[in-house]
Length: 458
Image (cartoon, rainbow, N blue to C red; front, side):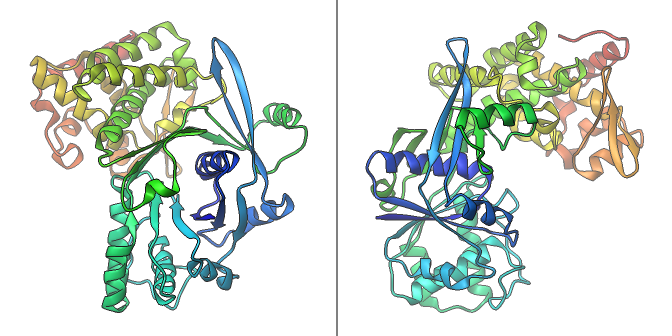
């Protein structure tokens, strides 16, 4: 038996990790998932109890030009534990010889350290602090270590988690033997995860349709896209406990996940970020709307083909195959991926997702990337129009008003009339002066003037 401890009961893990472990179970593996809720919010436990820990994952996509809806019954979950009221069950897992893997998704902010955390507390401490207490219990039981596969969307997520655990060992003055055990017995495997999960249906029409598809109501049903990729750093004996290949989710074991990370950030996330401001300004609401608009779709394709794909790796053909799969995903009519959701924190996203490609293009061609420049101009167009109302920040689009959510200093800067030119020069924002790229500032200012005149840049 291979037992998994899963920190987190949310939609993503249920439609991603649990769907994968279910596929292994269906293929004959003796495997079970034990879920632990990471915060004291037990509503979901009641739902699991009511359904005997069973639910359905519905993967909705497009194939050969038609919609596909595949239902995957999930019964791999053995129990859902609330450690805030049932510490015994929580620590019993730590002493279980058959426990091999810990999976987590406690949001990007979940992997952090606080020197105010006490080993005698539980409710108010961080996830890494809770994990440290769990691992210490396993150490005291004289058992071997575990393979940890965090799914939080931060760079080198397992390295960050390991660092936090080490800090708690030092903070709490735990034995040196435990510190050594943690370093040598536990394998912290960095991961990259990729599947868009929309979760429980929000509108009544979709909910009614999916209940009809299932043949019963399911308070835990969760909806995602068919595409799923889980890249896992190969450490210890992880290949004994998880299987490569497509098992609902495609799993890749590798000694270096950097290529996969770079490919996802630049191709999927980067093209998203470059598309969204233009899409919002031209009346689109979802990514699907953009794909079905000729001008926006061409803007997306030109950016990918000419300015992103050639600079991911030397294997351009392989990256192009991934880019084509991304376009298929963007064209999924079921995802309802809101542009306003993708637009959250757009400044830091542009810096992380697009600036590296922009710089590679500039270095190669000696000039600015035209389509990323247009995307940046549309982004600046939104921000320079910001207005503050009741503590929130809004922009009036030609078709509707939307709220912009980003770091407060950026929002305040533009709402108070700050200039685009000075913002582009701000090294504190970009870690460099963007106006140093010859022609970039003048192109952006020219594009902004054209938008003010009611012209399209597409």
